[in-house]
Length: 89
Image 1 (cartoon, one colour):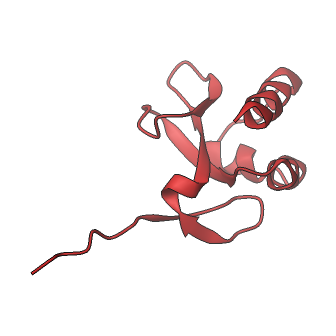
Image 2: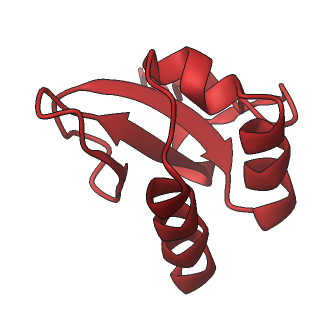
């Protein structure tokens, strides 16, 4: 018997589509209140998932969905840093 491993699904805070976790980018707020892209998917802190698409990120920022998910308003620097990190992926 070959047991198929279940792929965890996460919802993008930009487009609200559920996708496999490995297709999304995780944004994390840690205890020090720093917001950054978690490339390992294992960093400690509160996370929000967004598609690897700048349009989804912009939509999530505009609707304040990332801020709500993380429980923290994002500074302009944090937003710029997220956009830059996502375009580098």
